[in-house]
Amino acid sequence: MTQLQLFPAVKQRHTSDDYWTPKWLFDALGLTFDLDVACPPEGPAHTPCNAYFTEADNGLTMPWHGRVFMNPPFSNATPWVNKWLDHANGIAVTVAGKSKWADRLWLEADGIVLLKQDMHFVQGRIPWPIIVSAKGSDNAKALTALGKVR
Image (cartoon, rainbow, N blue to C red):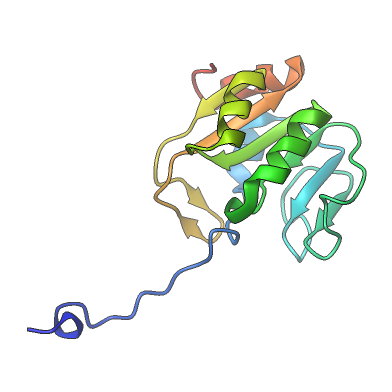
């Protein structure tokens, strides 16, 4: 039996950068953000923010202000996480991983919550563990609505 006979359906998949934060997460946090730095191309469908940058704006090159929400491109999280940590005010949604940026995030975040695996994003679920991190005491306090905060 061939591989094609065993698995005849072609799998459809999103890239690791196509997963947008679900509304329930924002509802649970109960925060309003001054800026979403990595917003979907259509703008914030349900992100409670006053301003946003899309991929076309390249949020990495733009100045950040106030409380920031960040769900960065998972394929290139390093520069995003580093800038978010340096900014030091906001919430970040990232995959849990073994990398220098993840080590820095673990050491410098004011709070981290590990969400259940197979989290459902707007485009579907992903198989990787997701962490929601906070910088700033009010942001860290908001994480308690998601689970146990480290």
